[in-house]
Amino acid sequence: MNFRSERDKVAGMLSPAQIQFYREQGYLGVNDVYSPAEIADLRRVTDEYVETSRDLTQPDATFDLEPTHSREHPQLRRISNPAKLHAVYRQTLGQAQMLDIVTQLIGPSIYSNGDKLNMKIGGVGSPVEWHQDWAFYPHTNDDLLAVGVAIDDSTLENGCLMVIPKTHTGRIYDHNQDGGFVGAVTEAGFRPDGAVPILLKAGGISIHHVRLLHGSAPNLSPHPRRLLLFQFCAGDAWPLMPPSDAYWETYAASFLRGQPTNQPRLAPVPVRLPRPRPAALPRGTIYQTQSVLKNRIYAQPGQPAPAAT
Image 1 (cartoon, rainbow, N blue to C red):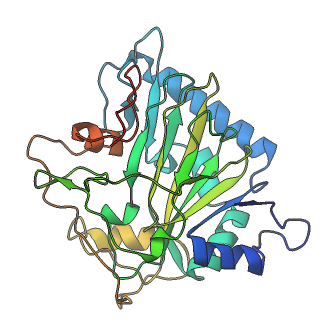
Image 2 (tube, one colour):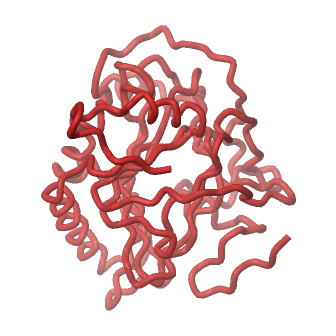
C-alpha cells in the first residue's frame, strides 16, 4: 500500500496509520518526499556517471555493469556507495523530511550502514532475486530498514520493488547453496506467493524492514527505473560481523542523528550468518553474489523465464 505524504499537515511526519501499517506489514510507500528540483539533480548526476562508465569493460569497486554493457551502449546497473562520490547523493541521504520519517520508525538515533543506486535500464535492467537484507548483515537487534528514493516512476512494467507483507516477523530463509552464501533464497519450492508491488512516483520513497522478503523483476518496459537505496540502523544496533577492528570509527562517522554507543541493544531475533562464501566468488554487489544461483525466480536479460516449480 502506498500513502500520500503528510507534508500539508505536519511536514515530514508519518501518520499513526502509516506507522501502524509499517509495523504490521513491514513496508511502506510514501510519495512527494523529494521535490522535482531534487529529483532533477539526481537524474543529472546519475546520467553523468553513466557517461563515465562508458569506457569500462569490467565492473569495478564503484560501477557494476549489465552483461550487455558496451562503449556504444553504456549500461550501468549499480553505483556502489554513491554518497561518497557526489554531494548531490550526500544531500539526498541527509534530507530532513526523509530522516524524520526514518526516526519515526526506528528511533531518534540513527546511522547509515550502506547505500547504493540500482538502475534498471529500459528493456535490459537485471532482476534482483528474492532475499532478506538481514541475511547479509544481521545485527544485535532488527531496528533496521532500507529507504529507496525513486528517481523515476516505479511501476510493475519497469521492475519496481516487490515485497511479501508480514515476512519481517517470521523466520530467516536459507540463502546458502552448496554450502556457500549466494544472497538469495535457496529453499526448495520457494515461490513469492502474496507478493505486492511498491508503486511510486518519482520523488517518492519505499521503506522496507531489514527482515522483509523482497526482490524485483527485469525491466520489460522502455522506461528506466533508478532507485537510490539508503540503509539505516538504530543507533544501538551493532553488526554481528563487524568487517574490521576499525569498524568503530566507521560506525561513529556514519551517524546522521544521535550519538554512537558502546552498549548495543540485544534482541531475541533469528539469525543466519552470511557465511561461508563460495571459494570462487569474489566480493561484489548482490548481482555478482547471486550470479551463481541455480534455481531462479526471474529470468536474466535475454533469457527465457525459468520454468515454474
